Length: 201
Image (cartoon, rainbow, N blue to C red; front, side, top):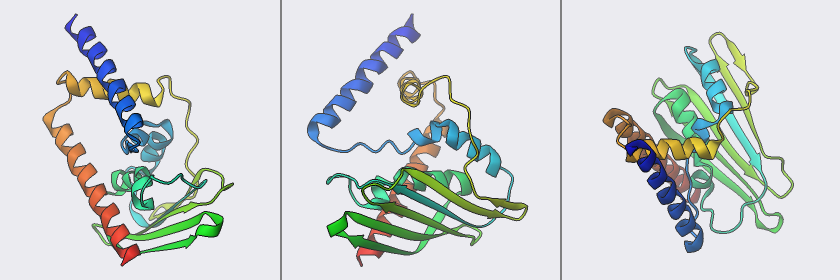
């Protein structure tokens, strides 16, 4: 059928792009893929309808290999989380601490929501640091200090990504949703660029 053909074509194109990206040595950051995770979906449900007072998202992980870019870009998936959870953001300050001898880096970005609530985003990396996302979101109704446990999804992340990709090719995603995705991606890239500028300025 037409749908099966479109899906198979999407599979081939999807993996062709992946292979080309790997061979070219360019890192492909699929910032939207973490929005498909059960972890994020559960957090989204917990946050929905609550009024933020202030919050922090602190990511830790091992050192990145050269070529992964500035932390605000290599960690853009976490920035995307914040934008999706709390709406349009602005950058008020940003700093970068580095200790090259120990492969240590810590980027701290101060963000503000459209209603002037404060958010802090931290990306901290060093060999041996456990990969973790630590949150502390203060709401008018109380605090959320742990990402809620989520059940394992029946469909893997990359398969969800492939299905989403094939739906776009088949014209099954509405123009409104595509435009919303473009706006979000451009907004996150703009924020990441501003953070880098402040850190290096």
